[in-house]
Length: 168
Image 1: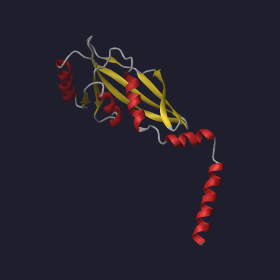
Image 2: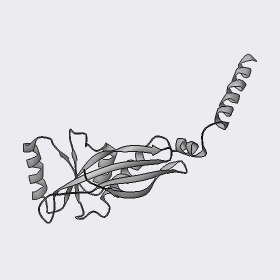
Image 3: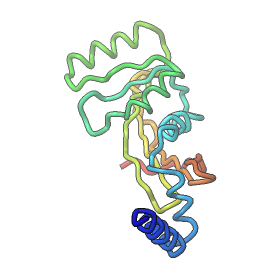
């Protein structure tokens, strides 16, 4: 009997806490869970490369820097073309670049992680950058820095827009 009373008291406390919780959008954010979600990594990767010129057909990620892509971002890119690791050692990098040059004239993009940030309870952003290490036209060139924005909607983080950012 006493345990039933304790359970009822706890239920009343939980109900009261829920009723006095912060704004409605906070409840929506809680429903979306942590940011970035598993699916937002892949969406960000594909939105980053969307409309890039030249169109990248091979993708690289740094090996030992703070620019290393999360595995879910790199896996999404590999759905669009083969992926390669970009080593820190210049001799090893030369080998990778030689390999990329010999297997075809397709653009190869080193994609760099710039971070993920929860802007508020219902908005988050994933930032990616890049550098074309091989292009069909010849010399390497910088890719854009892009902020891929997400909104918490109906319990999921959904893509909302991509914003070009200045390269710093």
